[in-house]
Length: 240
Image (cartoon, rainbow, N blue to C red):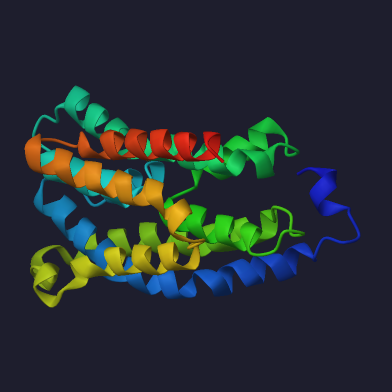
């Protein structure tokens, strides 16, 4: 861990930051529970073994691509198809990592890459918001690990529990649990709101993604929306 972050007198204690990250992540953890149970149940119904469920969710910590992989799962599995769809859906993480890079540059590369391995949409949003709401605040490894510890372990645990229950829970979507993640993202976006001008890339990205989703099959709407948002953001910054 970089001495810049650990041994500076102005940095909060690591344990305090770890605990702060854990407390901040608790509301999101609640949203993880129904989706984790749903994914684990669907995975077992598709033919994955109980031991393969935590492998799926632990090695690929990204709910969207995991649901897509389970939906496309077959016996034997179409590896190239699964890998391609997973890459397309997870391609947004490349841009998300770039957004965090300026705050990670003083960490050793291996440790920065290890932290990014555990990054999901919710962790990225919480950490970026935490940094940006205080211009004097530096990237806190303790806060990042606190958020990650809660969300990562809960996701792996509840997907495993969903696999254990199998068909006992039935179709959880009839209870409206599929609205949990969209609700979380709306709250996260609200907390990152900085005015209409900065929201333009979001709106364009959303519009393009919806159009591509309606016109083309597959997960092409993910990279299409991402690229459109990047282009608009670049043009916006260039014209400032």
